[in-house]
Length: 178
Length: 216
Image (cartoon, rainbow over all chains, first blue to last red; front, side):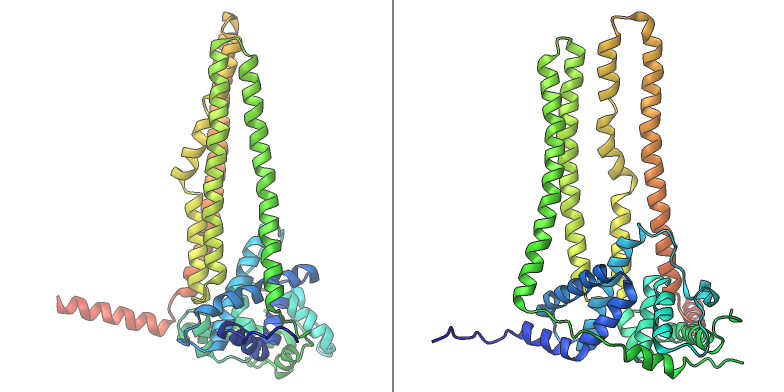
């Protein structure tokens, strides 16, 4: 007769629920913060570990989605802060990014499109990167504001820049933009 | 003229990226925690062995020394290494506590980033660094004075050496302090820029201030 299986704790249940719903988004987020496969796997593990640890304090004051994105971005931003000391290329803000450096041909296939998009995102500072990633994940301005802790008006202003940047990036193939 | 809407192709390409379905189970968490603790302990043992070796070297030199001034220098060397190791141990504990808080935080990203930078800047602030480095100042001059005081002609050179020693230490601390302060201030300014209100909110805030002034 086997050992009785202990019922999952609410922390573990919440973790399973969070990973079922947002596991893929967490992977995409880790990909946008770290290009190196080995470091990315460590980052992914670190996000999952800290998410699991944090969920024993989940009180439902915000949605599970907001909670997951906050933990994931905070862990990833800490990773970027640690890594930037070893980087030779400085990170830039939305206004300073020149899409010509990472432009693509208009008829490029999806693989090329994604890899160039990752390259573009990797050059942004953590908070600007967070806005772009959350936008691509389909969050509304109000939801992004809740995750990032800035006003919805501020998000709307910055989202205008994000949209313009991404539009220039694809529509103009990066050649005539900015 | 390009549209200011992000292309749907980009959003769909982003969201349809293949993913591995990565997830962890409790045994994975336990293994990751054990690995992290193991790595941290390994680094800490190297640190301890290094400072222990420095202290032992000071002790051996003290026992072998006959000159009383140089003996004082060796005693100061031992005290310096022990004090320095103790301070680094305290700093390590504080940094680990802050990192732990930040990694587990579920506060909005901007607040977490600000807390992280302020904590890091505090570690590099003037008083902290000077009080920990200042214990190193007398060691070199005392040890070298013990060796040179029997040769009056060398005192002039010794004085120059002391000045160079003090200047080098002060310069090193100044450079570290200024570089760190500038880096963290720049990052905090970036956060301020992001936090800055939209034009409408700024107008409303100014209007509120104007109303308060009218009420005075």
